[in-house]
Image (cartoon, rainbow, N blue to C red; front, side, top):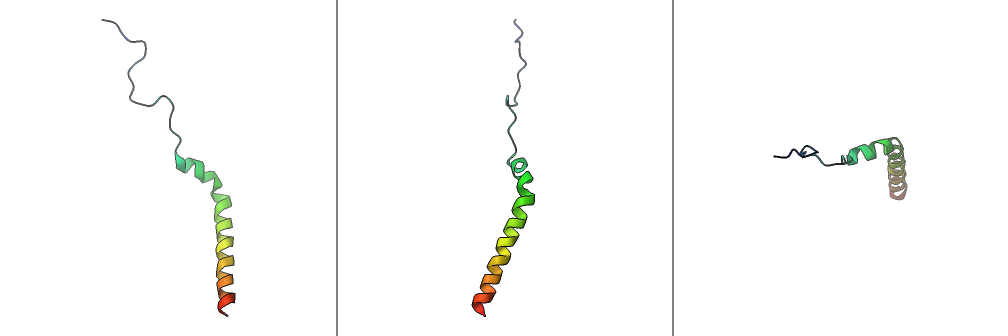
Length: 50
């Protein structure tokens, strides 16, 4: 009986990158930009209705 050199593993050889971890560093930039666009759209709607 021979012993294999590498143990059997059910885990992938390279760990997968979590998509949430890729987005988290961009949150401080995205939230103010989206807020600015939202304020602009709300002001545009208010002016167009007045």
